[in-house]
Length: 415
Image (cartoon, rainbow, N blue to C red):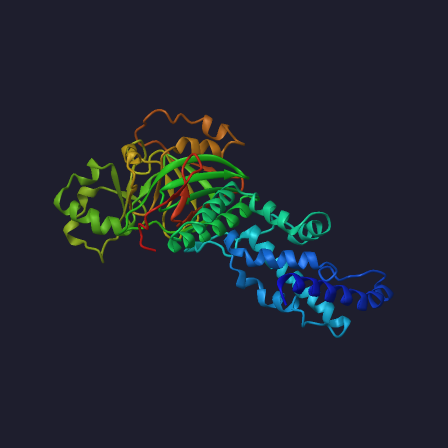
């Protein structure tokens, strides 16, 4: 049986089924409740879209194409109304699954720490599906969902170009497919909160307010030996004039050998030594030769001010890794193309712009502080972030430049 005859036969089967159960359904409910089996056009369109799922960066096998094929087989006949109602429900479940993943992605990005429980409720997929079935088409619903994010739309165009290329570059296809779904997820969650996104491989930061990109800047991230961790966490505070509390590993492995050789190391680097009671002690009163990596009962911190390693601003969020987003006095590093220099923290190219954006609804919070002058040991000033802002650090080998062009980046951490 050729394709044309097979389609006509399928249509006849469906129409016969509708005639078979129409009387039962109307006598019971007063109308026909079979949403999908009442229209072979909708089933065929759904089947066609699912078979083209790779175009949308999805996997057709996730949506039971075998079931739809069997349903549309000329040999398939329902014996009773229960079978038809069950089939209609299964088709609807398949459709909801397909369109939910078009809206939210088929995965959430893999993060080492998830300090936020995101609600994926930006769309009412069931209502959209009902509306488009009645008044438009399923293809139009696909186009609608794929156009909600500029990044997703751009990545899908790039994906199509690579799918059509000869030879097909499978590695880049995989990266693009992953990126499309990452950005679907991101687009959904940024409807409910402000998002500060750092991508490690590109060493770039974007701040999103709804669909708008509010900030774009370069960042310095961790070198390969001390990588930056991925996470999602609420931003709760901006610290003006922060202390830098030196991590224990840096204090013992990097600073202690220098302390043993140079008595002036502490003062020359604007450092302070705190005892176990967190009180400042005179570094000259300590015999550093008595201490090692396993025996170091001190905390070392750097005094506040322009020369502080954290600069004049630090964005604080829950972090089990002890990493933060902060200013830096080493501005020249931002001109480098490979900006992997830190011990894991992230340094901002435009810290004042970040501070003003976080407090755009409360400009007095920063306007009352003169950040243009360099003070000696100024007092730290914590300012709570009261709007709903979330820090996300992820690892994507695909990112966009400031003009929105797609770029592939080196796998710096070999993930």
